[in-house]
Image (cartoon, rainbow, N blue to C red):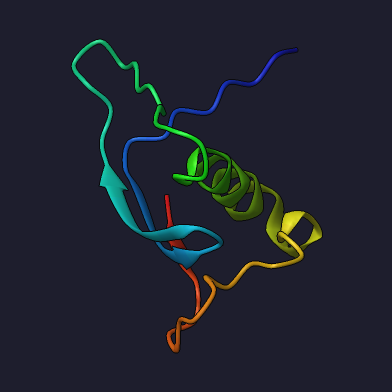
Length: 75
């Protein structure tokens, strides 16, 4: 049996390279994560894995460098 997960909303703050990201899928249900090098694409994907998989998937450097506020993820 295959289980699918739909993310209806994503909010990330102070995780790895990401200062803040808020997004909801388009009407087609497709969201593309893109950008230049070192802009936080992998940080967004790591945040989703952490949120879905718990602390087992927490990145080793979860806090954004220089941030005084703890990481926040909401799906």
